Length: 368
Image 1 (cartoon, one colour):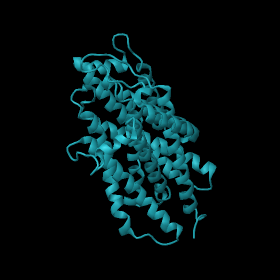
Image 2 (cartoon, rainbow, N blue to C red; image 1 turned 60 degrees about the horizontal axis):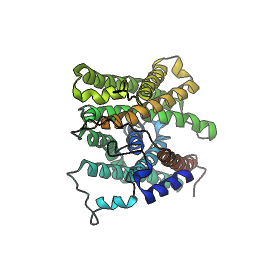
Image 3 (cartoon, rainbow, N blue to C red; image 1 turned 90 degrees about the vertical axis):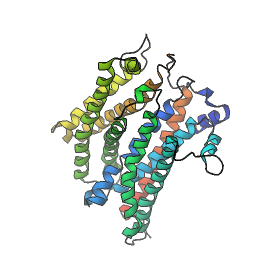
Image 4 (cartoon, rainbow, N blue to C red; image 1 turned 135 degrees about the vertical axis):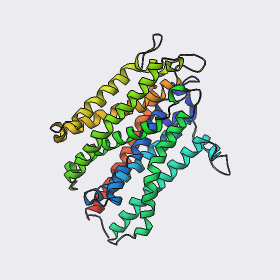
């Protein structure tokens, strides 16, 4: 966190010249992480629906942890956006009355609105419920259930708007896909449960908070469905690109096989496909998914695989080649690495603190 903070302060002073981004590749590691984390935040809905809508008691115990993970993820998203601005004072350009948000014409303005509203929703719901449990008072459903229903719709909207932000660029044919929003949501529902499965496997081992096996079983079932769908949608995109084999498929060629001797990302996307296939195989196998340690390893592979596919594997090829035909490759600088690591560390730190408080209140260790 300290190294990341110092790196960001240096960037705020000097500007984006300390990164490897350029006029040709103007989005890099910051936006790649932002895109991935929006999906992690949206995946909280997979715990909200069973808990609040279907009243599953096993999910009621852990749904607040899922919502707090969403809060941590959205905070990280906003931090990555601020990092990508170069100088934080540029944010003033979209603040109402000081600058101009340009809402509703701008898709970027929509993204700002839906992310901040989703953050407030996920702060209110667990905050209110934990406060009532802390005081040993019954919660008033009228004060949080309407927010729950709104958050379910909003969870879908945050990733849909992010997908529209990409597909709205007419000069970037790699992103001009009508199924991009669906791909975003499905990949979110793959990486999100994988992260939750890792968290819910670790928590009982380091705390006295018990998580029922039925929760882990449901998360594994989700992964058994979403991983094959995610791979199918990715394959559908590749078929469209390579079967037509038009000039617009140059970015896809660069991603998978390289282009004119440039193939920096190709090993990573093939690793992503391999990791996702291995992880999906574990959750599709009745015998393998019974082994918790193996499931954690498979979940890590899925998280890394989806991060590569929806992060660097989506953002960077969209800029290569440029509309003018320039082919400029991009790799994050050491400075970008430290900023990214610092933001991830901050998010993990926040979720750790949130979880400790939530578990203490849920376990009735911390009460008035």
